[in-house]
Image 1 (tube, rainbow, N blue to C red):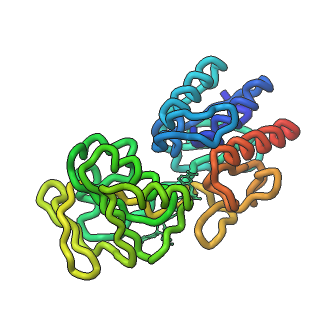
Image 2 (cartoon, rainbow, N blue to C red):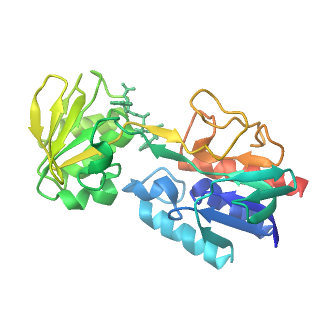
Length: 290
Ligand code: NAP
């Protein structure tokens, strides 16, 4: 069967586009390599989505899954590694044919680039405080980064663990002032400015980290919150220097018939609301062409 549109990525952007296309009676396939919901699954609370005063990230993900089911939108769990063909004749992973493609693959967490980092993933290193925080109940942990994700993670973990070392490479946070205020009033968060981690130590699990000033601190967990890289390697068209996909105002990329939306594209504001908006606009423009 040839689909009208294949959407790659089941975060809010891809799910929104799928909903609009399906409700317009188009044949849509949504391919997601992990779980429907995407990055928002990692969020503890979402408080900036209109009409949802406060909702857990995983609840939003579940709701998205249920909405896809109720609309009978076909979802396949698979990693996309190739997009071949041209407008109106694309082939994804050498087997799924479609007329138009929407890339909504989002971003992945940056790595510290330290020796042993890969070995300790899931054994002390985590990129998601809300997913893994409970494993560190009553223990000491480090959070690395100075953006909103690092601040949110430190606050969340401070309610579960014994002590949080919040380690930032500069002397000023990039994240919101309101979060900084909460952190400054937490007894069990110690902020280490102008500090980097140069070594991860431990046998099977992380036991300590060595800082740039050679101080060694004992921690059972290290939450790496130092930004993201776009998941754009499947796309061969125009990207910026950071590998984010360049689109026009209709969200069409430099390759005719391939659209890109959400966090994977060049844009100023990466939020749930803007991702949903991208999905709506891309789907609406595709509908005009199908
Ligand atoms: P981010 O804002 O890009 O912050 C990344 C942090 O990591 C920065 O403080 C950066 O330091 C630091 N960093 C980068 N590379 C590093 C390295 N190699 N070693 C040590 N530190 C390093 O990323 P984010 O916090 O993941 O947020 C991404 C976007 O999502 C932002 O727009 C953010 O506002 C948004 N977000 C919003 C909320 C919310 O509540 N509204 C929650 C989470 C995220 P420098 O500051 O020195 O560059």
